[in-house]
Image (tube, rainbow over all chains, first blue to last red; front, side, top):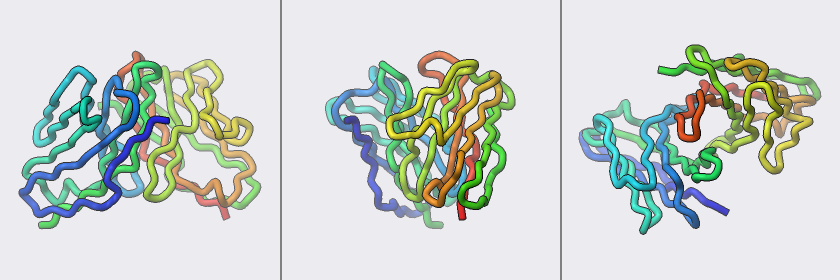
Length: 112
Length: 116
């Protein structure tokens, strides 16, 4: 079955640095990957979507890359701020159902 | 942007009682709504997908008689946890999208259910 793997260990970085989070998937390439932010006790908030034929997507301080050879997506936050501290979820969706399957998320902690 | 609300935001109930959770899309018509369950430090697990006016499609392992889903209008879906037990305690989150195969899902704020 399809698996979405995100680093379960929290990522601790210093304010101003670039945070890089990893999402790996097994088996089939998705039609697209999505990244969400989730704060404690809250629902996820959509950030970015990247399709299988795209290499990179940007939105303000956020950047997502997609490497179908490595079966991996990287999520970058440049000039990170303490307010960026949250759990970031990766979601995979196939061309068949377009219903996303979520990874467990990686907790990001930005220290002032 | 699109807003999805959930009510209540938290609920505590006794074992054996039923609990209803509402999910509303406030500023768009949601042709499809999804219900997820999330345990602490775990990923969102899809429970069911519902399209307005039709029966919900449940994921494998989710009891449809225990988790009743109704999507009676384009802005409202309800999840009823029947005869709740402590193991049903979890964070329940709904999401909605307006249509198409790749339209973004908008998530509600979630409902924390605690069954005593």
